[in-house]
Amino acid sequence: MKKIKSGVYGLNPLLDGGINQGSTTVVIGCAGAGKTTFATQFIRRGLENGQEGIFVSLDENKEQIVKEAVEMGWGEILEYIDDGLLVFIDASGKDFSRFIKEELPGFVDEWKGADARIVVDPLTPVIWAVEDRYMQRDLLSFMFKQMRRVGTVVCTLEEHSSAGDLSGEEVVIPMYLADTVIHLRYRLAEPGLERMLKVAKCRSSRHSEHYHPYRILRGFGIVVERGDRETPPPRDRTEEIKALLARKRGEIPQAIYRRIHKSLDYVTDQDLGDLTPEEVVEAVLDEYMPEEKVGPKAGTPRPTPRASRSGRRR
Ligand SMILES: Nc1ncnc2c1ncn2[C@@H]1O[C@H](COP(=O)(O)OP(=O)(O)OP(=O)(O)O)[C@@H](O)[C@H]1O
Ligand SMILES: [Mg+2]
Image (cartoon, rainbow, N blue to C red; front, side, top):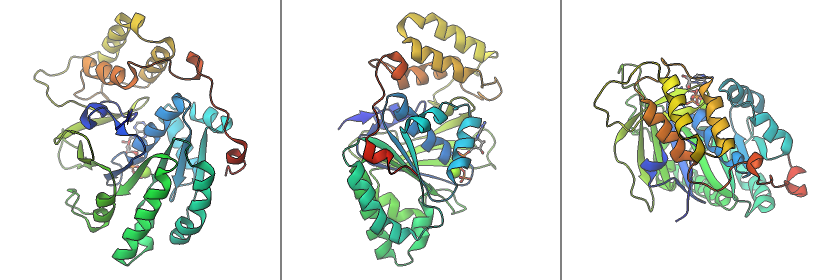
C-alpha cells in the first residue's frame, strides 16, 4: 500500500505513514472543527508537488473557499488556480443524486488515472438528498468508486449528534464505505481538550487508536500533538522554532525551508497552545522529509494540465 503525505502536520505517524494512495478518507466533525481546513491542507500538499487538485464544493462557493484559504496564509492557492492545477467543481444547489449519476461519470472519464487529490466538502448534502438508506449507500458507494479512479479522495462530513462521538445516524454509512475515518472532535465545554483528533479507522494500516489534541494555526492549519508531554511548554516558542529550523537548515531543501518560514509569520505563541517547538519542527519535517526535490521551484516542472481537462474548468 503506497502512502501519501496528508499535508496535516503530525497526522501521518498516526496513519502508519500517511493516507493510502487511491483511497477514500472521510473527515467527520461538527461546525468549526476544522473540516475545510483539513481538506484544503490535503489538496495544497499535493499541489506543492505538482499533483492536480479537484475541489468539489456542495455548499460554499469557490470564492468563499479561496478567501478562507488566503486568510489562512495560503495565498499561493491563487497561482495554482491560474495554472489550472487546482480546479473547482461547484455543485451547490444541484440535484446531487442526478449530479453523481449523470455528470460525475463524464468528468471521471476525462480525469481517470490522473492521480489527483480530490476533496468533497462537505459530503452531507448528498446524504440528505436521499432518504432511503439503501439508496443512500448505493449512491455513496458509486460516488466513492468513481472518484477513486481519478485519485485519492477526502470527503468531509458534518457531525450533528450532540454526543460528538460518531454515533449520529448521518455518519454511519459513509463510515462503513470509507477506507479511512478521521474524527475531529470539537467540544467547547472541555477547556484544554476542546479539539481532539482520532483515527477511527484506517484500512490496511496499523493506526493510532487514541484521541490526540490538535490546534488550528494560521499559516500552518491543523497541527496534531503527539500527546505524550510531561513538562509544560516554554515561552517564545516561535523564535525557538526558527532557531531549531536554522540549525537544520543545511538538511532542508531551500524551497521547503522558505515555505516553513513563511508559515511561521502567521503564528503567535498564544496560538501554539501546548505544542512544544520540537513537536512543531518534528511534525513539519516529518511532513516534508525525506523527499526528493519538492515543488516546482525546486526543479520539478509543473505538469501542464491536459487540454481536455482545462476545457472543463468551471
Ligand atoms: N485564518 C484563520 N486563522 C486562524 N484560525 C482560523 C482561520 N481560519 C479558520 N480558523 C480556525 O479554524 C476553525 C475551523 O475552520 P473550518 O472552516 O475548517 O471548520 P469547518 O469544520 O469546516 O466548519 P463548518 O462546519 O462550519 O464548515 C475556525 O473556527 C477557526 O478557529
Ligand atoms: Mg467547512
